[in-house]
Each structure stands twice: as C-alpha cells, then as structure tokens.
Length: 285
Length: 285
Image (cartoon, rainbow over all chains, first blue to last red):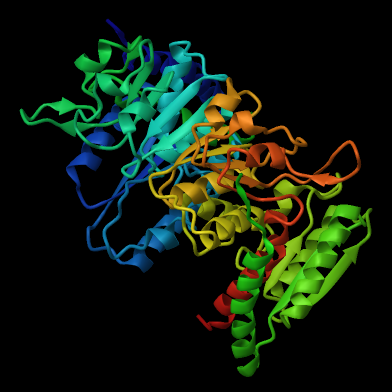
C-alpha cells in the first residue's frame, strides 16, 4: 500500500523559508506586494483568492485586490494593467484566467511586465520555461509539482516520467521542468493509444487532464510515484483528483491525495514567486 | 530493407509552392527580402549562407548579406540590428549563432523583431512553438523534419514518437511540433537509461544529438520511421548522421540519409518563412 504524500508539510517548508526572506526585505524597507487582478466574480477565482490572501497575510506580504467589472473593455483593462506594471510598490501581478470574451488574452499577455508576471502569462516567461531558464516564473501548479517531488526526495535523473495532459497550465510546463531535472519525459494526451500501458512505464506519473478518477491502478507501475494535479467533483459532490487515489495506491509507492495534495502547495509557490520578483526588482538578490 | 527518403523532392515541392507566391507578391510590387547577419567568417556559416543564397536566388527572393567584423561590440551589433529591424524593405532576418563571446545572445534575442525572426531567435517565437501557435516562426531544422514527415505521409496522430536530444535548436521544438500533430512524444537525452530500449518503442524516431552513427538497429523498432538530423564527419572524413543509416535501414521502413536528408530541406523552409513574414508584414495574407 502506497504512502499518501500531503502538500501541507511542503507548503509549510516553503513558507518557513519565505518568512525569513520577508523579514530581511522589510528590515531594508522593502514591503513585498502582490497585485491580484480579477475580472468579475467567478467562484473558482474567489476561492483561490481567499486562499492566496490567507497565505500572503500569514507571510506578511501585502496584497492589493483589484476586482474589475465583468464588462470592462479591452482598452480599459490594458490601461489598468499598464498602471499596475508601472507601480513600483507592486512586485508581483496575478491575473485570473480565463478572462471574459471581450478581453483578448493574446494581446494582454504581451502587456503584462514579465518581471512581475508571477504566474507565467507573459510569453517571455513561457519561453524561459521551455528553455529551462530558471530566471523566470513558471506557472504555479507545475512549480508546486516540482516542490512536492523535491520535498519527498523523488529521484528524477534518468528516471522515466510520464505526463498525462498537454495544457500550457500543467502538462507542457511540468514536462519541461521534469526534463530539466534529467528525467526521460513522455507526454500523453487524449489521442494517445494504449494510455494505461504507456502510463505504466512511468517511475513518476503526473496526471493533469481534468477527468474525475480516470487513472486507476492499471495505469500505475508497481512502486511508481503518482502526482495528481486534477481537481474535480465526483458524483457524490465531493472533491476528487484525476486519479482514483485508493485504487492507484495499491501499486504506487507514493501518491498525492486530492484535496490536500498539490493544490495546497500552489499559493505558497505563488508567495515564493512574489518574493523572487521583489528581490529581482529591488536588487536584493 | 527500409526505403531511403530524400530531402530533395520535399525541398522541390516547397520551392514550387513558393515560386507562385513570390510571383504574386512581385506582381503587387512587393519584393520579398531576407537579411542575413553574419559575424566573422565561420566555415559552417559561410557554407549555409552559400546554400541559402542559391535557393533564394532560384526563388527570386532578394538577400542582403551583412558580414560584420568578428570583434564588433555589443552596442554596435544592437544598433545595427535595430536598423535592420526598422528597414521596411527587409521581411526576414537570419542571425548566425552562436555569436562571438562579447555579444550577449540573452540580450540580443529580445532586440530582434519577432515578426522578421525567421529562425526562432526571439523568445516570442520560442513561446509560440511551445504553445503550438503556428502564427510564429519555428527553427528551420525541426520545421524541415515536419515537412519531411508530411511529404512522405507519415501518420503521427496517436503514434509514438521518440526524440533523442533536448536542444532548443532541434529536440525540444520538434517534440512540441510532433505533439501538436497528436503524437505521444518521449524526449530522451544523455541521462536517459536504457536508451536503445526506449528508442525502440518509437513509431517515429527523430535523432538530433550530434554523435556520429550512435544510433544503430538496436534503437529501431521493426517498421519504424527514422529521421536523422545529425550532421557529423566520420573517421574517414565523410559526412554522416547520428544514425548508422545502413544498419538502421535493416529494420526501419523509412529512413533519411545524411547528406541528402533533412539538411537539404532547411534552406527551402527558410525561404518559406521569409515569404510568410513578407505576407504578414505587407498584409498579403
């Protein structure tokens, strides 16, 4: 029976490190600050925002929440973003996506200041993730996956990693991050043939497809590590992952639960990236 | 015994299509133009330049060769590049890399106009390759690989592709382009364990590692397609690929030779990208 590896101790460790850094920054007169830009009031956004506010407050990082009207025009949004870009008191910017239809993400992504872009919206940060250049900001969820693997001492060098999902939010960036750690990486998706067989080649299996409990023990090699990035609601209205945790745990050595796994690390990663941005901008690193 | 698939018919087909497009552009008074920026006189650069000049002349595409002194300073180079960026008669820019040490590619890549960047130097084009956004310019070599696969009707959807090599010139971009065509993609490299075994899972094997004849028939599944991107010199001073062509052909269904394979398609792809850039900039598409 595999061990459940939880996100909380990982988040706690990240926060402990950040606390010391915030203290140092504040001692020098720098107040780290995150600006959240939310258009409308999507319940998912609000819920994430609440979590982020809690973590930032715990860490003594200032947050400015900008709740913009659902019907804001492209021009108004871009003007607003430019103001936040040039506000030197703001070090990190998080824009909730997807944005409403009238706002063109393919234009806006070029407007956000890459140095403040703590969730990888700017193509300059996207390119850095692809290149394995760690000076930028990867998206928080794949970064949280990597923090989990590091905290639980999962060996990656030379190991086979299989990623199910090829989104720009999880699958592709986490593949590049695993590659950077010298894993041999296979990227699977909806068109993959014999998916359970391919998945069961993995020493490390990362699942991010958004289908409740799709991955069962057939997908898991004996002793594999399973990282479940999915957050879904099952038929009983309960939160669940993309993996059937209990069934997979019969073969996995380590497996992340949902809830309480990767998802509980992302806001701490966000805080870590705000501090990184703050140090870059204030020349403290 | 596998069939050798040559680059020439692929290049001929691409050139045929371009000729018609150039004729149309010229009829409207637009003269497509490539600007090559070469620092110093590296023999590899000169050889590629000669090939490019020949193809562009055949296709009636103007070329401006800028041979800059080996000891040019960063400031002088950046000033020069900015002039080429803003020259409206130039539609495509090719900068030979690597640049000499005094020139910082990590600065220059942000200077080149992404709309004229026909060989994927700009991070904006790098990000597009990663995202699968075909409005940009991928590097010419992986694009040539995809042209070969398309011309020879190699099915990719749902198939297993293995890429050996994780460079930004070949391995990573070709992996993303194969993924875009719905292949299940595995990326291998120097740290991969049991490389011949992993490679032999491939329906399509792409090799770009820069080691003469490293890949032999042990790496090849019966009936696989082998695309060899390597250009090396063997112990007899002859050009050869990363694969031992003759040995691999015992098991492959299709295999590209070196020379005469992928390498003979890249300058035609370059021309294709110059025309794409020209049409984008002149609003002809």
